[in-house]
Image 1 (spheres, rainbow, N blue to C red):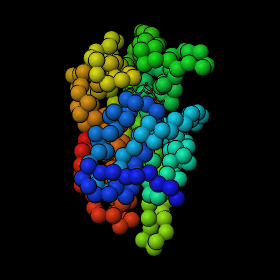
Image 2 (cartoon, rainbow, N blue to C red):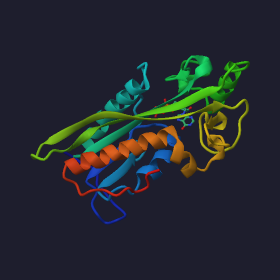
Image 3 (tube, rainbow, N blue to C red):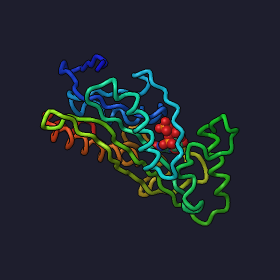
Length: 242
Ligand code: ITT
C-alpha cells in the first residue's frame, strides 16, 4: 500500500489520517481548529491537501444520507492513501418552521439558479428573506450530521471498519435583516436562542462553542477518542474541543 508521508509538529509520527470530506473551504476553516492538536497520533488533511476534488452529487433526502454518501465517496479515494484513516463528512441544513423545514437538505441550492451554476451565499440569504416575508413565526434551526467512515487496527492484527454518524443542532430565529460580517452561508440572519448576536457577529471560537457544527464535532471527537483507545492507541488529550 502506498501511503503519504506523515509529518507532525510534535515530532511524533502520526498514525491515523483524519480526512475532512468537504469541498467547502468555510467548513474546513471552522473544523480545523477544533480537530487540530487532539492527538500527536492524528494527522489532519483537507481534500485540497490531498489534491482530491470529487464531484459528489447529494442525492439523498436526509442530512444523514448525504453525509454518509460524501464519506463513502471520499473513503474510496483516500482509503488507498493511508493504512489507518477516519473520513469525516459534514452535511448541514437550515430548517425554517415557517417554510415547512426548508431549505433543509437543499440549503446550498435554495435560491433558483441555472442547473450548471450554484447560487451564492448571498443569493440564498436573499431568497430566504424573500420567502419569509409576512411569515408569522421565524423559528429555525441548524442541524449538522457528521458521518465517520474509516479503518483502524483491531486488537488481533486485523482492521476494524468505522461507519457511524453524530449530530449537532442549534435552535434560533431568522432575523429580518443581515447583521455582522463573520462566518458564511446563512450566518448573517441566524440568531441563536439566548444570544444577542447573529453567528456573523461572533468570532470563530464563539460560533464554534455553541454551533451545530461545534456540537457535532465534539461528539465526533469523543467517538474518535474512544475508537482509538479501543484500537490500542495511547489515550488522546481533549485538545481544542469547543
Ligand atoms: P460540502 O457538501 O462539500 O461539504 P456544501 O456547502 O454543499 O459543501 P452542505 O450541503 O452541508 O455543504 O451545506 C449546505 C449549505 O448550508 C452551505 O452551502 C451553506 O450555505 C449553509 N451552511 C452550512 N453550514 C453553515 C453554517 O455553519 N452557517 C451558515 N450557513 C451554513
